[in-house]
Image (cartoon, rainbow, N blue to C red; front, side, top):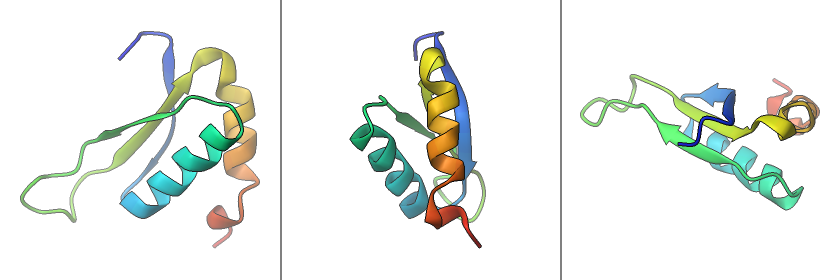
Length: 71
């Protein structure tokens, strides 16, 4: 992964991670995920989402104002 990408979100839910990545990409922000979940025991670990450093503020605004995060 390029060094100009920053971690902006992490979750244990792969569906939530995919929804956030799709939302970011629909808004013109390139996003990638890194799955750090245990391959044997899926209950352990997280999925991290990264985006370019120059898009961090916009990406965090989109994530924080997304209904999926209202729990």
